[in-house]
Image 1 (tube, rainbow, N blue to C red):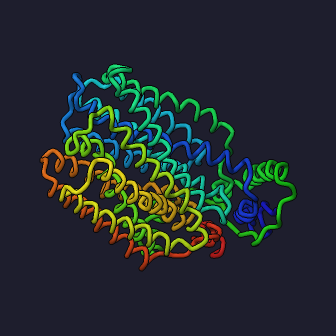
Image 2 (image 1 turned 180 degrees about the horizontal axis):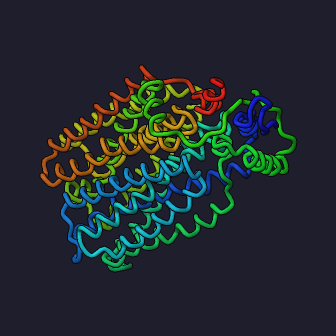
Image 3 (image 1 turned 90 degrees about the vertical axis):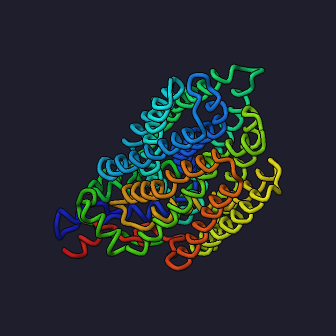
Length: 487
């Protein structure tokens, strides 16, 4: 446990924080991390599903009366906000720490979601959705970083996929909520859809209370020249785990030598992404962009397809959204462990490829009119069972690809670029295609999504790398370690 400056210079120190974190058996501490941070995706899933499920009611709202195209534009506004939030808060997370950002981003989400319930026209609704997205986008960067840094290496893939997959737990909750708030026999739909956003935002207060008990990431502290504080936190974590699980196993690898420094500069970020890690940058961009287009194009317009082409009443859309959400939730939960056993490269390639092939087949069946509303829903459920695991693995890949000093910024940047390239275009394009009312035109949209998923599978097979079971510092050496080696 040598978190003290080495004899050569006070700017260098030796630390075994990574080895001590990775040796820990699974415990209550790790469950608290998953619960307090993973709730972000539950909230995101709740928000996105509410918009998808409530699209029909918002379209028919006497105060808003949004067209299909405007609903698509508000979905894009949410994603634009997420892009801006991810970049801004991601930059801050690498500089002021993960823990502080947990609270700021959650408060932004909470206030904006509540404000959405009081929107009075298209522009107010779009602005509040953009601000909600900004809070969620910031959460993606800080939370994904912290989870990867706190979870032992042998569980990292399984946990990261499961946590990202809980988005669909929120989606399932949103689907059930929609069944209640859109039922005219229970509540006026105009009051129901507004109340859903207000209550959803208010739930964030509970999350704020839970997060008070989470520490700062010891890995972030050690990489920012604060080894003594990292030592104190890791010792406290070890005491908690040992009290529950008994004596801790020995470490499986030795300490590393680091130099005291701050966050990575923009020049270092640019050099790491586009020179020393160029292949990983291309891989991350392709995986994030392709899954974002596929997911957001289908999901944000899901209710519109059901109401326009299958004549499903708006208050019944939740019944069709529920199995879709549960299928998405089960994908990462059931397949996640194979990303740590079979390996990242074959599993990511396989899930992207299967999603693309199934999407192409379903798109052609939709155009031919072969599917009923329930058959269409079950086809999407099977597709996104695999696509959900693939999308979660994209975040895992980006987080593992780059040095720890720039991890949050890397996740934010690739999330932002991928979402802007694939996610913002998708809902607007599909909203426009649906408004045109031609099944054949919508089929071409589905085939575009399928082609992108197959392209991502091919890219992973060509550029993917093995990270399963390896310490983060081995997958991508910290900039601080390189600086120390050069002294």
